[in-house]
Length: 171
Image (tube, rainbow, N blue to C red):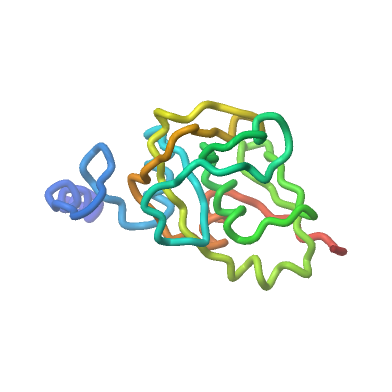
């Protein structure tokens, strides 16, 4: 048996504590874990607060009719949530690149702070969420939502998930 097959066999035979994905195996690295949750249809909410037991509906701070009510806001794209955790500002431009990943244009003066950014990515069941704007990335729920898991994330995770940054001059 080769090393890969032995690892796969070992993983399938180990039981894991806490939250597990539908296949019963708990991924050990952050990116694999996030991608598996995304594949299984979960949605994501980012926060600097690592101790949220239940996300409660709140009045949105965004612009547009979809953001005009009280709800729990989340995204099908974890990159959006991670970038929001690391202190997104109105001077930043966010958009989708040709591979469906997020590209952020950020003033270079923010680079030291952004690269040290970290927070918690909450994994939420999608059943109570409805789709909204922002190319289908934003969803909202009118009811409180209990996370099924939470993942510590950093700016490096944003990049590892395919996110891109264009550092621009000026503020």
